[in-house]
Image (cartoon, rainbow over all chains, first blue to last red; front, top):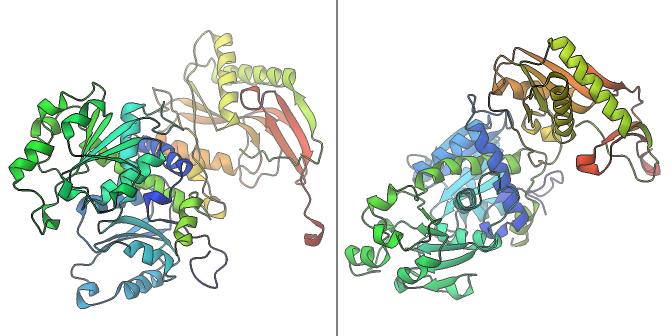
Length: 338
Length: 194
């Protein structure tokens, strides 16, 4: 299927959902990111690969961290970057997604990195035919955040298997525990799909009120007790408690949440020696994670930021670097669901 | 990198066999020592895939000759190619620069086949982003001609005048199970397209 009717020369190339990626696609992205990471160690951190291409960061929701990460990735590949934030733009005057998309198309955007508060907005953009370029989902509502899941998987593989030894490998048999606000977390959803595709066993740990309806259909286990799961975890991913999305009382007090689901030094001691603690940031220190854990050598939060740039470079290269995407299955599945 | 796959229907004729390849690599190693007056500051960088194996073999021969280990690495040029937009995005190969880097050294790029010269142009760009060598030289197993850029090799294993209808394929034991340089005929276009 095609991006736009009448144009038979282009292959669709998008990254909308981690569930669209096959194991081979995911491993290709991780391996490519490993090469990209080496660019960061060089005196000249720049490649000419996407020279002359334009990447638009279309952010309807504030996210400095993700935007900067995509911006750094695109700039390291020599692409031109346009940052578009909805605040103060015509969107606040009532412009629709379609009109914004048509404007970007007219400006010649080769890729649109979109962050939107509504689940499904990137999918709509990719399949509507409004634009010809690649669409990369940088977080939509409570749905998905595929590049975050990829950078998490990359971090786990680097820490547990090794940077060089990990090339070509997946996460077969590794046990990953995701703790906290699963209900509001697109990071958790993308991670469950991707980590399972890569062969890992995923366990979600959350208060029953923060477990989404329909979780039985997800390829993972669910537990309500963090202490029981910790000794059998290779990686523990702490999610941020998203106070801004909490419009109802999901748990009695922050103190109680912190005591049952927060990670402190004592709990960390129950984890196996090699296990790592992950956090997508920004961290609520003292809430889901204590400063002691956050600052320990086992916490990968800062590494995850650096790895994010490498992963996004890899994704932009594989989607835009050639005449066709190197991730055909992801593109095909997005079209299939149309 | 410029070698092309021959079509299974067309029998490819070997122009170099394993002993010939070993001999020309020995000669290239001697030429490098002679021109560099020893191999004190030489760094060999192979261009993936087969250039890397050739670079390692030349490095081993240089060590035999000079008694000193010569740093050897690989330089992937995929992201510097000028035809990226014309082909599907491809997987990246490995870039490994020896620990001491290339700054102020004599870098010898090693590849299997020298053809249009575009791979070497990309390699020079890639090298420029890594450091500033004292000088850069080029060693190739086969020079088949048809240059599209003003580039020539300093060390050539075999000059092989070819027509554009021919293909040159290099096989190396590390990757293909045997050593050979094969000259074949390019698959001709189907009748309807001719």
